[in-house]
Image 1 (spheres, rainbow, N blue to C red):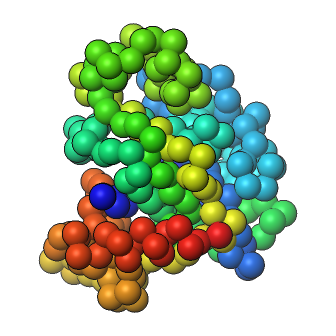
Image 2 (cartoon, rainbow, N blue to C red):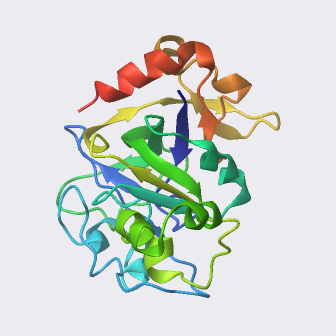
Length: 248
């Protein structure tokens, strides 16, 4: 069994802000903006509604983003995730029953909207949900195993399959489908603590509590600020899985 952590959602590097977390620990997942050079898709921050609050996502981003199209991935309606980034290529090896835990930076806000608050430069990182894997692989591999109608059935709501046909290389695009046990959490769970990198710049690492009790040392890759997937050590896989499945 495998457990892997992946950072997603709008942040200071992709969008220039963070999604909101409210006083009771509830939050809203805000996707990154789509590449303005390509801009496939239909939904903008103004027209898309958050999966948690059901409010227009424009309430949670600066005005300059209101009419930008969103890169809605992962999507929490049918639990799919896709990425053509080579850093994510190993995700093709995920098997049925493995867990993919998603985390993002969140900024304290109020349910009335937070588009005017200044983005915090180094916000904490929070678990926001997870997929229990049903199937995963490169699109080219999936095509050799499954018919196109089945691929559409599994991944039809994923941004890359729905809007980027003919754009993404099927030999590079990794797709992950979660089964019905997957969930977007009702309360975000902080997993980071501040630290400094070798140059003395602020960064974030997996917190001591999460390292000790749930995820281990992530095979020596504790920096989770802006990175590729972080794989849980074999010695902590069962602990991590139990922890994730116990979250609400």
